[in-house]
Length: 251
View (cartoon, rainbow, N blue to C red):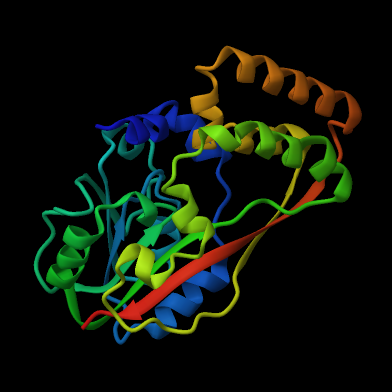
């Protein structure tokens, strides 16, 4: 397991509870693009949030992740089967999947062997769909007091791979071998208290990596204390997170 995988595996139960759910209209759109809705592969499932969303539309979902700890804390569902496996060597049967989905993880893969694996497991003309969320958008006060200054403090601690997601999974950056489909706009919308928002921000890989730097540790701690003193703890904060989506037919 590499450093980045360790970052996501740490405190997997907290990660599962703090991350937002994906919007239902995303899964509805995905299912409507598939010729059949029997079998889906949710690759790099993490805590299984995408897998259980897909299970509302597919008869069976195989959900894999390289982290055994993430799988141990994944959300149970009767139509989801979890297993520990890599994105590039899933161990899944050949040619059996109507959909290959990747939520919040494509930018960490080794692209060339992953696309070979996608072609191996997918049915002809199956749908591939990957997505991830952008920066949280909220009120001016919350952005000014918390999100923007935190992003500035954490800037040095992001891995370069994250920018592949922020750039929208550009075809040339991920070596996407299929014709890219036009996709609608999808947005996660939640109403969180300050504490819930901070719980989410603390799941960022850059936040976890910054804990190893004494100066950043102090600066982030001071920022969180100021935010808690200025933003009412019981206020419900409306937050939007637009999704970056990459989709295409497997041919």
